[in-house]
Length: 159
Image 1 (cartoon, helix red, strand yellow):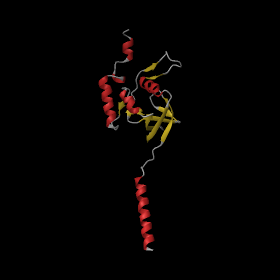
Image 2 (cartoon, rainbow, N blue to C red; image 1 turned 90 degrees about the vertical axis):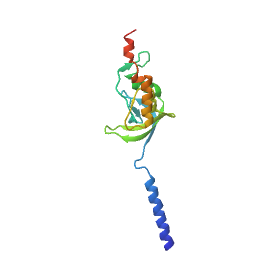
Image 3 (cartoon, rainbow, N blue to C red; image 1 turned 90 degrees about the horizontal axis):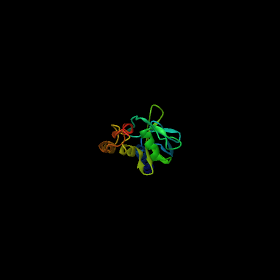
Image 4 (tube, helix red, strand yellow; image 1 turned 180 degrees about the vertical axis):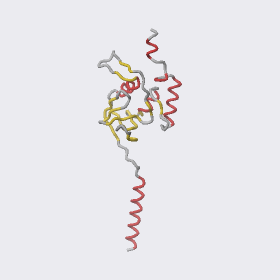
């Protein structure tokens, strides 16, 4: 009887330990083709996804008339659309948002899309973003690329 009680206590202790090791919130993995929205968010498998750790500031809307059909949107959303090229993305949910969208870390092959957008200068790192994101923003700002560069509209007027 003593051995059975001891065995039950050990099993219960192991079960309690296993339950406490589980993450508090299960993270959903979403993988499919991504469609870039005008504001730079993604539509993946019916989910509206905002990229984790970044803010995409609104920039002027641009239309590329040399491509058929004509893609239009903010410069940041067009850059992201060209990067994705209709490819398959893998996203891991980070948090739900009040508007029904979700914030997620998304990857194209092995590349973090938030980090890529920061490197290209199209986004701003949020205050709670990883340190790496803030560093990538500062590098893009110092290089004068994306939103940190010379506005394309200003160049067009001087030709």
